[in-house]
Image (tube, rainbow, N blue to C red; front, side):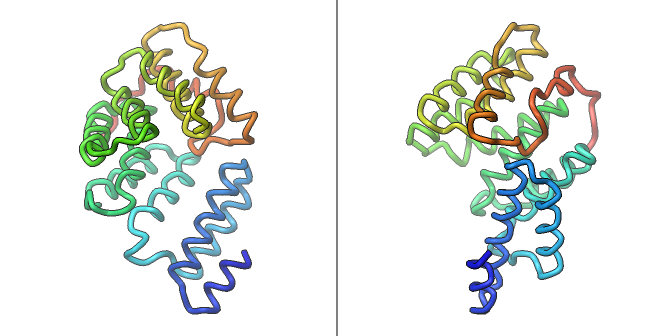
Length: 219
């Protein structure tokens, strides 16, 4: 908070708002939802980020809204995804966020469109983490029972990307459950979350509430 106050005193409102958003994320991922919502309210009063923050604030807004109304949160972030330029700094993060929501709500068209966009804009990425992330998100569409998504999650975990691994295991668990495949992906996601003190942004594990395909929804 000292850095946020310093940015505000210096007149850098964009940096101050960015710092406060990071503070909200920190509270949320530690399971401190009440504190996250207080910081979010303070950010709303002080003015949110400008054009430079396009997409980032919307992603956080949708994640905070997800617990109370998943479909509204999804529709809101979908609108952002459609209007955001692929050159925008936040585009990849927004596409991934919409894709993970679409998986849970079983919006297969939305999942296909967001993962396709993500794969398109990251086609030139060659780093090992980027390649694993592409396997993960590509697999949300191409891997019906989550086998390859689970394998990518294991590799992310082995490489030390534990938060990403927990999320990928959680996604793999949903795919496996819907396909009727026996998997320990849920257990692995929960183990990692417990070890790193993670409270996943889309709700508590295991996410068995999404195991059955949801009724088709409009956007």
